[in-house]
Length: 460
Length: 141
Image (cartoon, rainbow over all chains, first blue to last red; front, side):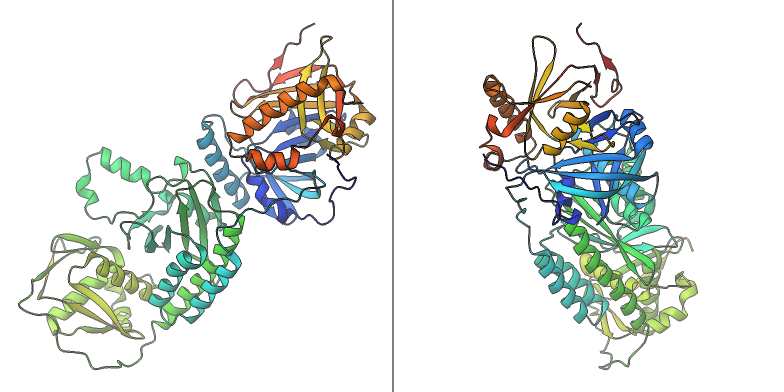
């Protein structure tokens, strides 16, 4: 075999080789002591930070650590698991992060690697060592780095999805465009859109795709929210190629409740959507106007299903979704006149009655003894049912609901009313009780019952 | 295998095969052209560090030397090289690497493409992740 004398030094960029950083073959590093003695060791993981920086796991107090602190010079070799072609980087140590987004990204990846390799008791991240990449060269002069066969054309998919989002005129169509686009344009089959409830420090499911139960309205304390909670807290995409129990969401509180025999308490919870045994998860914070409004979680039953490119793609479309949610929920508060006169009361006295039970303590609402929803959305549906029984009127406006904000426990600053109504609309459609909400125009809605309504209020 | 240049820059390259000579010295094979920077550093400083691992068990051994020399690979190393190369492919295959694609890149490798690095182990350590990591390993006299 003949090697040409030139290695490729100039054209290669860190971005071109970032996928090699998460290869199945651990990266190797060579550090140098102050007296010039080299030291070689394998690393659990190297993380792409940006075009000029990588972060390496700092796990043990050892010779490599002493060398890094003494001279700051490291050579890092990463191998392509497909061909064995290597890339060598010359790095300069900058700092060690013990918290923050880079640390959390690395910690999540390490937890996944530890889970996959049975090293959960051994691998512990002390810090994320951040390095500037001073040079990189491919250590095979002849063979090009093979491109992985992509799952789909992500750039084109983002464009199509973005175009669909831009056409959405209301919250419902925005959310539909997003979830349909994830499947059609980005080939993602399991996803959950979580919204942040700042008051309750929790997340609730606004939409999901790919699960037997959509789980619309399912709630989760932020502290139990797994990867989505970390992404939201650190405001950075977090991805695990090999899942770890450490980042499974909602498991601990549910397990505890079951162990304590509190099945009764579980009756007023909506089952969380999600894969029972995901192999890969990626969580992306949803941000708009300088605020975090929620998180998108996508998952797969295949290892390493998502890549750095997915992080880029979902960050872009996630930001557009978040902007749309922020803009349209404000627009939803502006009423327009009803386009059609309210129809006569549609409830057929011959149809089965709908017995609604409301618990003001937490505003949980049951319909015909089946749990519907609680919290703000529960307070809204209880008020609408009460109003309809009292006046026979189906139509209502967001303005009315805002005026009743105190009773409904709407957060003062950002009432999210449009989103709550959309959540309620979806939850009612999912449960199919014979009770539904229809949008009749901007800021105008109707509560439609298939039979006579009754309302009982307990423990007021 | 790693080394450092006279001005302290680390160099690193994958070695194909490693074995001990009857006199206690070690030999490793490194691709001459892609490993040119490493080999130049070794020639200049004679310092080497080797991390030899078995991916499937995570067992890793670390060895250092300060008298390394770089020689042409020689015919008697052929069978050892072939054996080591096959063992490496079998290991990385367990982690999803594709033998056909590896062979497309490295399959034509011959001794003519390789250089031999020979050195006397000065000290060795257990580098297997876990509580024993960093423990020195006694060398035979």
